[in-house]
Image (cartoon, rainbow, N blue to C red; front, top):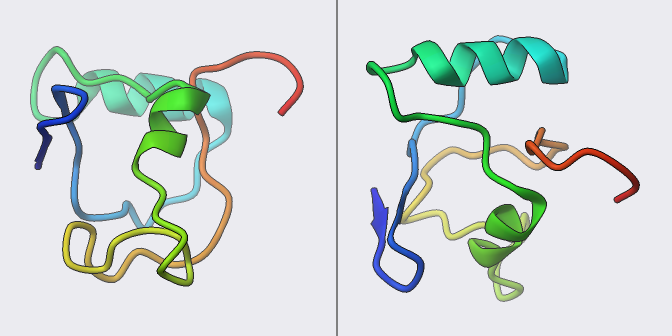
Length: 77
């Protein structure tokens, strides 16, 4: 899915496998060829919508469970 406000492309379906941050980075690099990566913290925030619980649009990202997701940002939250 393309977010036209940022120009970013997002995978709509959440992976069922749980990864640590290092493995999540590796996995993203291998998904659907090259060019995929973990989003930054700010990029993840850009797809939040407070009108939903969890704060993700269920039409854009169907069946996305509430939870914690890795970003490529290193450091404190």
